[in-house]
Image 1 (cartoon, one colour):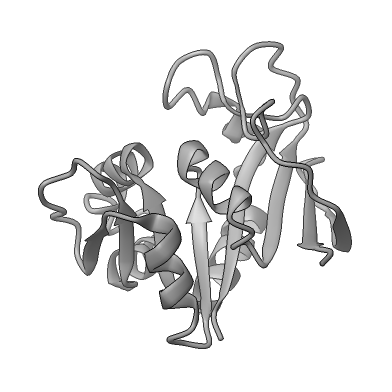
Image 2: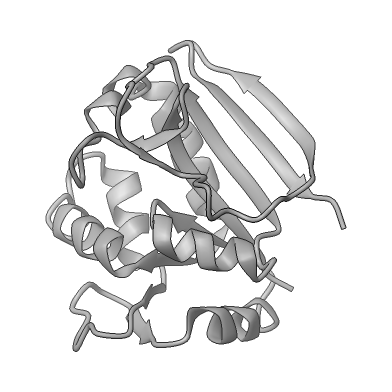
Length: 185
């Protein structure tokens, strides 16, 4: 069975983007060779990437044009099968992308059809739906050494209570920390 894994970079105060949509300047605090290596290591375990509509549009815009920078990451991002969860998107032009209308139902089915990892990047609204449906097998958060003070929180007042077990805490040279958690049944 595939594992559905949330992967997000968040600020110390829990924001996954700044004040405006796609305000990700705080990511610069952790972008280095170590982060690139970790990203590629994760992508090599993936057999599918999952996005909400807004994240898909931003990622497709960036990665479909980033073939040479960084090469290995761009090649994997462009080659891997992708799912965009959207009730309104008419077409998905990024290589190997399929649109699904009912994320909870379709992703539950897709989890049964393989044995690699499915990563959900960003996608706050989608992630909230998947958390409520108890579909995440793992939460991976890279806590950047930044306090934004204002921004969009990954976990909101609408997030359901979840008991988690720490699988790993990995400090990085950038002073960020990767936290891996699994839900406790």
